[in-house]
Amino acid sequence: MQHVIETRDLTRRFGAITAVDRLNIHVRQGEIFGLLGPNGAGKSTAISMLCTILSPTSGTALVNGYDIVRQPSLVRKSIGIVFQDPSVDDLLTGRENLRMHADLYGVPPGEQKERIDEVLALVELEDRADDRVRNYSGGMRRRLEIARSLIHFPRVLFLDEPTIGLDPQSRDHIWSYIRELRKSKDITIILTTHYMDEADRLCDRVAIIDHGVIMALDSPKALKEQLGGETITIKTSDNQLYMDRLGKAGIAKSVAEVDGEVKMTVDNAHTLIPSVVDIAFKAGIKVESIYVQEPQLDDVFMHYTGRAIREGGEKMLSGMAAVRRRSIR
Amino acid sequence: MSELRGIYALWLREVKRYSRERTRLVSSLAQPLLWLVIFGTGLGSAIGIPGLNYQQFIFPGIIGQTMLFTAMFMGISVIWDKQFGFMKEILVAPVSRVSIFMGKVVGVATDSLIQGIIIFAFGFLLAAPLHLSLELSMFFKSLPIMVIIAIGLVCIGLTLASLMNNLENFGAIMTFVNLPMFFLSGALFPVTRIPEWLKWAFYVNPLTYGVDSLRSIMLGSGWASILPIYYEVSIIIAFDIVMVMVGTYAFSRTQ
Image (tube, rainbow over all chains, first blue to last red):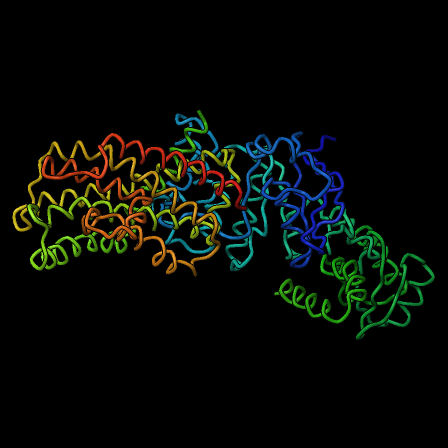
């Protein structure tokens, strides 16, 4: 497997604070890789170093095979970036912003029009391309920035909190563009987010980062599985008898009756559903409802950063609670 | 080649921004006209300068003033770029800091030059009521001098912007840079009649030589310049070179 990004003990300190602490990640060609963490966890600092905006205190990284410390110019040519804060010129039109970017990145003049039209179509901004950005909504500006980051055909795209501050509809739009991108172009995407659902829905792999350190790194699915698998909840005409029979079958890791329903933790819920129903059928018990629940990435996040909360004390707790509230909303 | 395209892109942006900020554009054109029409007429009728029409005398000074103010304001606008995040987009582009700085210099210098040209055009339009005697040849002779004046002034603005992170000091720049440079350039009164203790302040001001050489062109033989025009032009160019280097240094150090 080819690695597009490889960090080697990447570290950045600001005075006494270590924002990123000996980060070692390997990002594979063509994947969507998420850095998930609360505000101030070090995600943006890590991205800034990979984009050569910020130089590391120690360690380095390879992006597209170029060293971020020694070959920043080559790194820059091969990456696209969407910053957390807006960075378009609002006195210019959308198209003018794109053209300027194309010039800055050395896109040959003959190819510019075609590429600009292509990226405008991708983010569905063709109709508004000649309006000044001043008259764009927040979501449209974001889309323009995504379009801009793609003009020079980057092989790696960095998205720093791509949907922060956007309404749910705009977020859905942005997500679909990101998925579309991955499908249609051979592009690797690194995104930072503090929205769990964003990481869950978009990313192939997620690194949970807190205090500049990676707490966990895996696919969202694997991370969730580490929490102890899935839950099957079944409601029957005779829960006591059912639990007795279920215990004898020995397919559940744990069984409990909660609010008149039987909840069991299992590995691979979907393949077990037939057996679960079969047990009830053989005992002559009527099944009233059944559903499967996978653990949420929220739970994973709490699981890993929860340790940090207890170590960090009261103040961290309120910060975490805020992050969690936002993620739920 | 790609560096040149980068400079071109930044130049184009600067000029577009300049032409689209209507309110600022109008007010920045109104100000020199107030100086020229009201101040010039008023003070000219009160004191006057022997052998010269006062409006004709301050006209080159007002061109210097409008170019100075435009260069400063537009140069300092780099701070807006920093505050609104646009600077990040430029700094992360595969273009060297030197080219980014040069793009800004030629862009803002163009704004400043356009402003000077517009005032020149007003001069032709208002020639009769203001008793100005202007010829087209004066305009073409003045143009290269206006170009070299603009470059140095722009670099001052950009250097100041590189050293500042917000616009709180904007008023201070106005008080301690713009107005002293304007008043101490001989734009409004002849340097020769200034007392000796204040003269040095005029002689260290590069704008003095800019205004003086424009005056040599527009007043012709009726004007005794401080130094021969070739010396004055050399001083301005030397100042430009120093300021480009200082500005490039200050700019590459920021961020």
